[in-house]
Amino acid sequence: MWSELHLTSTPQLSLSISPHLTALAWITDALAGRRRGLPDLWRKAIGARVSRLGHQAVRPLAAPGGHVGPDCLVPRPPGDGDVPIKDQLAALRDLPPGRLVSDLEQAFGSGPLPVQWRSAAERPRQWLHGYAGAVADVWTAAEPLWKRARALLDKEVTRVGVAAVRGGPELLLGALSDRITCGDGGLRVAGLDGGRYELGDRRIVLVPMLAGKDAVIAGLDDPEAVWIAYPLPGAQTLWSRPAAPALDELSALMGPVRADLLCAIGRPMTMSMLAADMKVTPSSITYHCDRLRDARLITRERRGREVWVGRTHRAEELLELYHRR
Image (cartoon, rainbow, N blue to C red; front, side, top):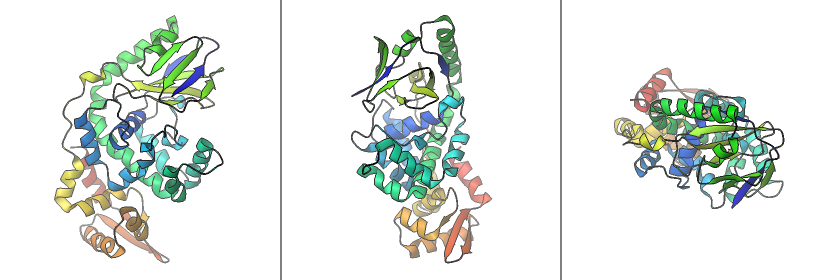
């Protein structure tokens, strides 16, 4: 299946350094099973690093034929310029639950949602929390490699700049990936939703990713700018054995349930929400939360009938230690 972007004139090109798209490419490859060339060692390391809640959140991306997703997968599109990962995570965590529901309706129309997205629409707050956690967990694995890619990124900035100033953007666009072809007045991208789009007077924003050789993510219907994320040339020289999964080490220290529980509380949650998301009985959640409170890793606050749980600064320091060793 192909998506086509119709070009009526020479497109204007710009480039955005938006590492969140690298994290999304790793999520779809390693967790959602859409293999795009990520080395197996990294795929396994990512699977071990992401929490149970994160694994649950990304399941809709694994559905056959599910190439379309809500816009909030990329809450700040790269058409806005360079977007640091911390800004994307903040935008995800601050997103109103209703925004996810409206984005799903926009993506899939007014009829029944695809079955894989229905649970997200029914519990949007929990889904957003889980997805943001998955992005953060994946980025702890990707960030050291991203820093090593600085010279390659600088080289790519120069390459795109030369094409934009001296002409020849069609040749550049056709060389981004084997899944992208450019000619006969159009840009065709394999493996997307099969739609046809008009570029009009929008510019094309290119987003290099540190991802498998066949990874392509695109936003062709953004009203401000078309954006295309593609594998960074030369990235294959950077792949090496990943660091041991931090979550496994944390599990060895405090047990897998408490490690998962601590990682799941990226923002305050109720005890009942935790029990439902982790599929653990309320009595078990209470027991483990008691132990985490004794270790001064969480706080508990009663508000009406609900008890809200949050992480302490001590817990944040512990997670920082294990995620960034």
